[in-house]
Image (cartoon, rainbow, N blue to C red; front, top):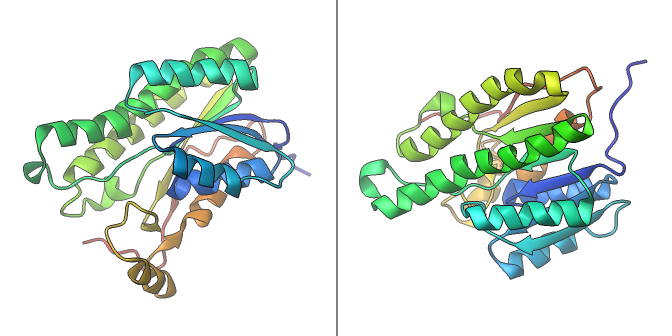
Length: 246
């Protein structure tokens, strides 16, 4: 029988773990036995996420930080060292939405790139030497099917997710000899605060199989995280049955 990896005792950092996919992932990992550290920009949503993650066999802790800030990322990884004593799994969920490039102020579209793309690279850059020193680890980066569908209105957002996709597929080859896996999860439409529609509209979209629950994407992340030591889920695409493409 093929063995599976276990979450028990695994030391995990989840970026953007205070809303949407990140929040669902923090809860599932902690309840599955992992020691999870996460962060976000707002204390209220951080507290809610940690409350969701309580009651399992693992643990969840958090701090206030912004993935777009170099100083904050240094502080987050100092907490990884102090509180977790290392890192076995990095899950990058931090992201913000965007409008078409020509409808955004320059500071705003630059902030999207700093958060979605640079923040992902910054977290990976800090995780890799730590994982290499301990003999291995796993990076799971949340991308998007926007890379493929190229829906009007998503030019800036799609650019950041395309960057993550190319980065991950190349990095996968660069760190394999360090026993570090690199996976990309590519969700379609998901019911998260990023969606610019009402809660009722989200509920209807879910009922019509046009949108997923965040938990369903978190389950895909857990699937990638628990394969055997020889198996690396390089790309995993998950979308609703009736994904809209325009």
